[in-house]
Image (cartoon, rainbow, N blue to C red; front, side):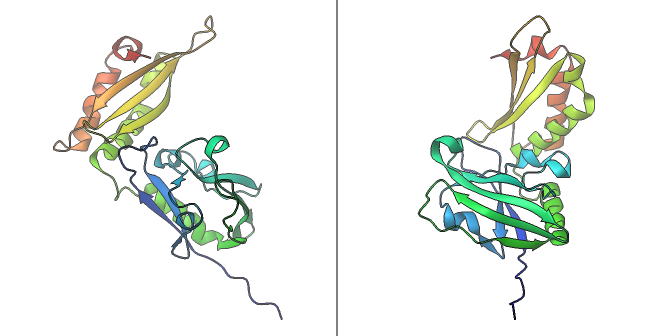
Length: 230
């Protein structure tokens, strides 16, 4: 008689990176049955699920389980995987299960990788949704970055000037702050013009108040005239 298939439990934990790390957005680390599996097979690696990547539709979240299998980069060395390696897994949805299989550790091929892991799909989806909404881990700079990102999307300020927000960067080294990177591309120009707003964040001022001040500053005029060109 075959043993019953073990169904694992997924938990996601936010971890704020140290100030010197290249990627300053908090990691979202997967725990399987309470174990930080990346710490075991890629110690010192950076989980490649930064918090900003959880702001879109659920089927675009980093660990979203779709019927079509897809390989996902779980960790890297604060560098591109082609250069320094990382950990990869194939994620797919099979009826009431989510399956993680075909693990690869290009950081160190000598380290054994986990066998196929199966999760209950309902528990898995619930945990992804919980992590996407969780803000309890935030420091002031993270809260301001989240609020500015949301308010910018609501105002459509950059779209009015044919501009596109490229990324939001967090600076944790003193003085703390956020950088809003955006670009503008004209039909008669082969390359986009790139700009940045550098916005300092104070720990002793309410985050909502700071975010609104930043939005007022950004949307007051053509952002190409008030931001720094890079």
